[in-house]
Image (cartoon, rainbow, N blue to C red):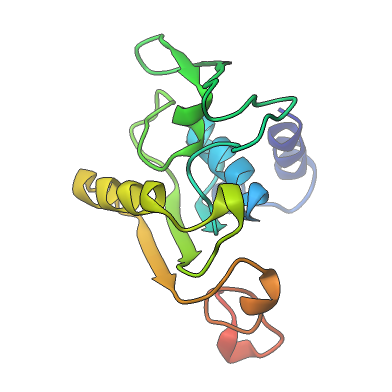
Length: 167
């Protein structure tokens, strides 16, 4: 709620176009960005996520529990059903009343062995399902691992070199 409030305040009080607010995250930040963009798709123009395991926390977390608990959230889907944490973190569950997600760019390294966010069958299943549903996502993967130092300077992330920047 705070991020949405800040974005709305900036649009109302500063020179910010509310139709051009993008969100980006890596690792757990990508899970948080995914949650926000899926719950409030009308608030964001683009979602860029790097190394999102799309499976929820592997170990118990004080906010989310773990993926086996699949705790309920305070969100409701378009049919009024309670949304559970597994639906919030994956790429393919619709959790808002909006038909569309923001333009979504998903990047993942196949050599990511970092627990919760690693490349595994859940990631591959989500990529295939998102593709089959025609969500219009941009889905990319290569041989990188998890760390941001492996992403610096690539065409997938911001770089000091103008020709390497995503925007």
